[in-house]
Amino acid sequence: MKDNYKLIVTVYGVVASLVTLYLAWPMIEFFKTSAPEPMMMPFVYGPIIMGLSVSIGAAFLVNRQESSDARARIVS
Image 1 (tube, one colour):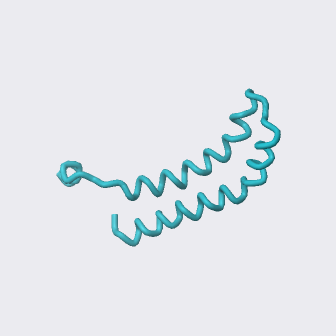
Image 2: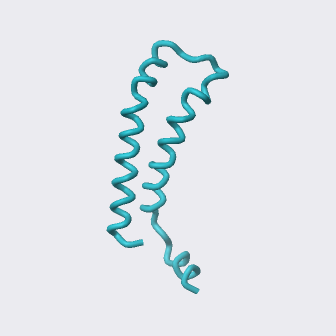
């Protein structure tokens, strides 16, 4: 992948993560003071985790180091 594409995806990952946390911050602060019931935890924190996993996953996947052996297998 070209360096400019890696930069674009990395910037997307950082910005999308910050926007997700910024939008979810009031809900996070609310549940610090009043904890939800254990059965409701996936419904409370699930959307935040899913939003963060896409952006953080994209940034990590695009910046991973490939071994020369893996590149050789892809070419041949």
